[in-house]
Image (cartoon, rainbow, N blue to C red; front, side, top):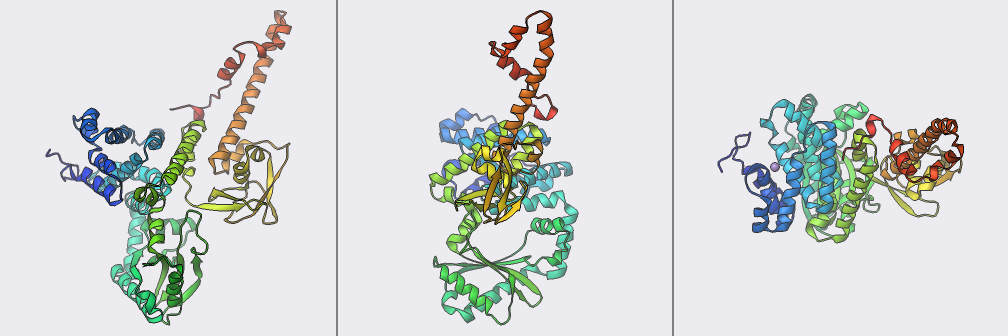
Length: 500
Ligand code: MN
């Protein structure tokens, strides 16, 4: 009671905010209570037993999960990796721990201002590297954007200011511009398709997030003004009839005051993204402004905003829950197989696939892979042996090498040879865990056989000196040999230290 946060606010504002955010996401009551109590065991004399007695065992378990994670958020890469691994372990038990942790992080980011600068940077870096991708992978896009926006502000204040300057120069009052453009879009629908304009649920307007602007321009070294999607207008229709989306599109396209930018048109309704995302995207110019317009129904909107999260938060979608837990568990088992801390760090980043692509086999079967997947990833996705012996592939009728990056809807036929073997440089370009695991497993096995051969080479003369050459021939059958060989063939490189 009466305790203050660094920001000067009463401490209770923190757990209260976390609980409030959980509630607004539609999480269940146990999760909300655990959100309120998430720091009690850590910061007060309250025990888990007391929580369990008053609120039940489930709530106590959730609080316990979050508490155990708290200690691990320490800057060093190794510790971060460890914390993340823990997070995933808890999540496999109860996914709600991740929600509480993510919203705890969001509120801490929102109140980061009162922290010392080095702490701000450290926490923001961790947020950008782990928590934002995690939110993205969980399908909670608004949270991902929020975490990115706040991290960007603290990590790159100069870039942040330069984008801010650009926007104020270009739009003077961005809110007034958004308002005007939303009105125009509404006018176009009212004029050309009055019946559908009655079904418009809401028109949203937004400025692209600073972090997205930064990322899009920094990567290709483009200027901010080259972006044509800084202004986004979203038309959400209260109708589950997709024809209404097309009518809105037609109304916008035929509005005399708009110039349509054909190259920006994308129809994700007739061709949904593999993650279920649906919308029509189009770009129009009005006076000096470019805007990207997205047209979707309320149902599509919810999937777009909350993705997978909407499944398990709103309905008790056991199937989806299982899938997420399966994913977490697969990351977990991959992690224990991967080599070393840095390897793990890299893995965890690639284990959070952002976009997915669908690839056809010659038979017409569909295989889903993360964006950036190569021919080799595809081969391993079909079968481990096929990956190990992969030489290259024919993609849409063209011969390509194993490191060729696949694109959505490619048709791929793998070319394999029994004489091919995995090489360590393959690890540099594959992106899927399955591929990495197979390659590492093979390399480890080969490494081991090399160690064994070397050891035998050294031992043989010793056996011969004592006239026991015959015994040497059967050394591998001796009890315990395998075990000793295992011990001595463990690679001793720094990077392969086990840390769990
Ligand atoms: Mn907290």
